[in-house]
Image 1 (cartoon, helix red, strand yellow):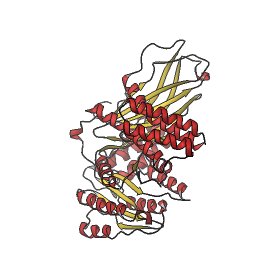
Image 2: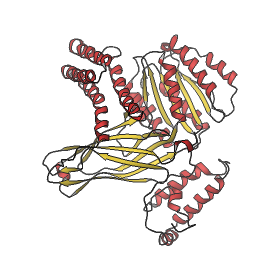
Image 3: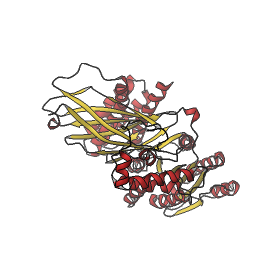
Image 4: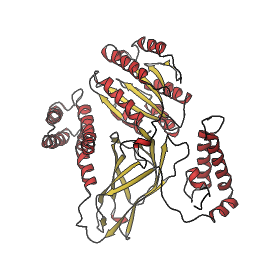
Amino acid sequence: MAAGKPDYYAILGVFRDASAEDIKRAYFDSAQKLHPDKNAAPGETELFLEIQQAYEVLANPKRRSMYDATLPPEIDVNTAVKHEIHFSRPNLVRLGEPQLIYALLEVRSREEKTTLPTPPLNICLVLDRSTSMQGEKLDIVKATAIQLLRSLRPEDVLSVVTFSDRAEVIIPASISPDKKKQEGRIQMMQASGATEIFNGLEAGMREVRRTLDPSRVNHIILLTDGKTYGDEQSCLQLAEEAAALNIGISGMGIGNEWNDIFLDALASRTGGSSAYISKPKDIERLLVEKFKALINIYADDVLLELKEQEHVKINYVFRLQPEGGSVEIEPHMHLGPILREAPLQVLFEFLVSPEALNGDVLTLISGSLKTSITARPMPVPPIRLNLTREIRPNPSAEPPPTQILSALSRLTLYRMQERARTAADSGQYDAAARHLHNLATHLLSQGEHSLAKTALFEADNLERMHAWSASGNKDIKYQTRALLLSGVKEKAR
């Protein structure tokens, strides 16, 4: 850009070839955040006027055309985040059979972590208080909620909702809380009733929306020990509404009775994560760790918007860090947050049909990455994401990058337990047992003796009784998922 000349596209956070509808939507989103009636922060009235000026020019076809004529060639540089892509191989081969190829996407902050402000929180704890929570579980939940309340900074907002077959707001969202009174209300929680998660989530959503602020980390933490019945679709729909408002949802399941598939899907809709609490004593540690992770967020979420490519199927998408978990494959994929100290790392598995291999270059993904950063009131310009590979007659002798080998190695164990679970769910118990024996062999080779023993025990259960033990499938699933992150932490040391 010429010196002193504003870049209206960057101000609105859109590409230069954005449609009129894209520009209108970007203006509406920014105006909602920065309008003086809703936001009196110093300097943000001026930012709102810049947004308004950009929209007035770009929404008018004639003025936009005249403005575009003054622009220099577009340089695709994002000053907030940077991304890197590693492929499992440099090219595809012209063959008459399907081929697999992997791509590892890393997105990280361009700024030094020491200069990044820690964002204020707007968190709602949605706590199951059904009859099954009675005793040690509820006592630890109450003690931990009080501990988190006491650890809040002056700028943080915490609300607490309890639910069974109905929901109750025991701490409304508030900027300046009376902590003594609120601690008393937490202590008075009593267990009763059945588990109906939608009631709790709906009440939690209302509380977060009361103090919803794009400069905060807006998040719901759901903690439950039971299954919900009949309201799963309502919960998933609510998660989609939360994602549209940039509200994250994380789920924590205690014990063996809760539905991990449902909780994974619920969290995935918003780029959140799910966790397994096998013993009540771990409730405190996992809740405190979650709060620390939320405080360390740089970007709330990275949204991948993509167009389907003919004869290319996205088989699998998995977030390796900061919090491991499967990502639902859809045109708008919430990939998850970027932490101040760690990049977002996502692995894609593509299946390429022979019909796609007729040209010289194949596009695997065409789309854009959109990042929401709480510390920046202005929109972050999107990043064009075009993953392409050359098509050649012969395979390359070049080995895969170490980043891809490491990612695939870390994910292998988790994929093995997935295959075992899928086989068991379809009644193929012998096949499921074989997958678990294979998993145990790999675990032993990596020194994971305890988890290998669990895998062998569950293989025996499936062969003899055609069933998992009470906690078997969750133990294996979440412990192999934890190994993904332990590999990252060791590498970072």
